Image (tube, rainbow, N blue to C red):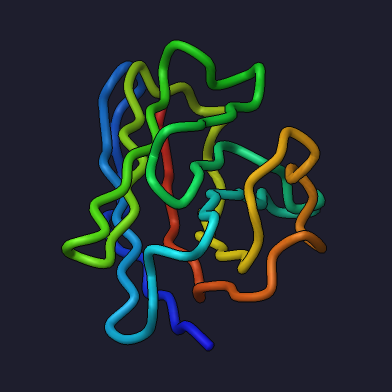
Length: 126
């Protein structure tokens, strides 16, 4: 079992940047595929990005390609989401998730992930 804790959210102006972090204080962090999802008010949780256990494979939602980057540092038990050129429409609660399985291109659905953090709010003002 792994516990996840997100941080780094906040209020930023359109065009700005934020870097989210998700740490797992304990557990075998390196064996998990990790992902970021987001959920805006009144909408379903949607996939943002995912990264394999060693960082060698990454997947992104089309809407964030070229602007967001997912990274992980297994020595720090932390996964990051660097978000650039932010737009108001990305305002949402951002969640990190972990799955004890090999990352595949189909792992863009919430049910694929066993463990979730509590989320961090990202608000982009126009």
